[in-house]
Length: 120
View (tube, rainbow, N blue to C red):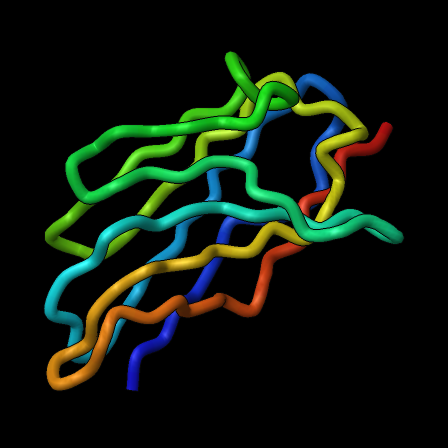
């Protein structure tokens, strides 16, 4: 059974930093990409950053220069370093992995989410 688990969320003051981790586990053959999404209260879930197996990255304009996504292919883990955080960054952050389990097709797997709160 493939599982995706996030960690690293918490409460931080504006201007502070957090590092989120997302680990995919199970009988994984390969992955195409892993990304971070977020959903603020009364907002739709939106893509924040994504990284491919080859290492190419994309960010939404709102976080460019403040958030860096990275990965460890061997561990099937993606990280999101979040700096200069703003109250607008407050949301539940979800990890999503596009991967192929042994004996299965490529699918999207969601984590349970981790809360990030930026407040003074």
